[in-house]
Length: 145
Image (cartoon, rainbow, N blue to C red):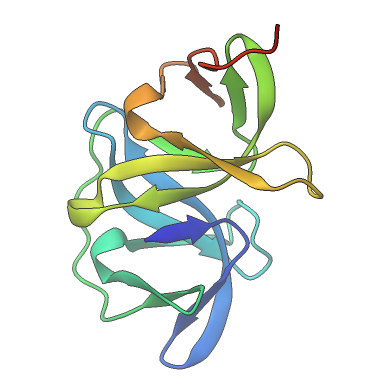
């Protein structure tokens, strides 16, 4: 499922906010929670829900029945719009969302260089999540001569 930051989050047929981020366990690359708020920004007013209660319908994030919360795991990262994407040592843009597969595994990161440019995907297997506030990936395979 494609989770784009800023998309509407709905529950019980009502809009309850905008997607602000996702919580990921760095070692296993498993998305554990989504984060949303009234204005789509992070802060003390933001709320979280377990990824098991989330699905996407027509481009909207829908929260179903909320399951009991699990204790926080060590090594969790917060992915949001403020995360910078670095490709081949150069800034490639900012994180615009994530693609989550079966079992909550991170399949790819969705990036965007500017608000007017298209989005691009970076496969999870190529991502380096070791730097806080940054997602690094290797150089492009194709380069102009």
